[in-house]
Amino acid sequence: MVDAGQVASRKSNRSIDPRSRHVTGRRHFFRLFAGETVALIDELQGTPQCRLVDLWELPNAELAALVPQICPGVDIVPQDGRTCARIPGNGDLLALFISDEESEFIFNRFDGLHTIGQIACELGTALAVSEEESLARVRTLFLRLVRMKACIPSNEGPPRNVSLPE
Image (cartoon, rainbow, N blue to C red; front, side, top):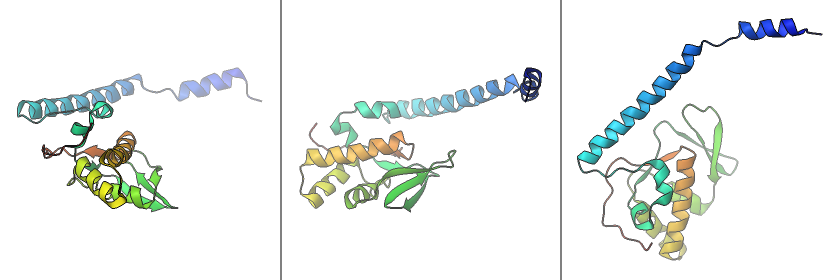
């Protein structure tokens, strides 16, 4: 049986240097600061900016103009009827979605070349569903992958002539 004195001495031996928390905090701060600075410069040069958390609030017409791409460094791994990903900084294999024809059709177009509107139009034609329905399906998968840190809108300005109903 272990007495309280032994437990207390073990805990004190494993103490964490309190300065390490500040280093992590500073790194996080400077990473955010750099990202905000780049966004501000782009905004001043006429490239509209949007925070990832704002994507869920975008109207369909604006979302349709986004160009989704898989995040750099993300490894895509098909496994057991699912499409999975290994996200940098997280060694776990995350299940992105169940691999079916529709999901694969959408996912394969998240290549940094197609807008969400173009993907929705192609999906609507392939499945013979309305533009609203196909956009809802593309939107759902895109936002799911953004939430899982596997996909982001491309930094290059998407074409602004895409129009879909809101």
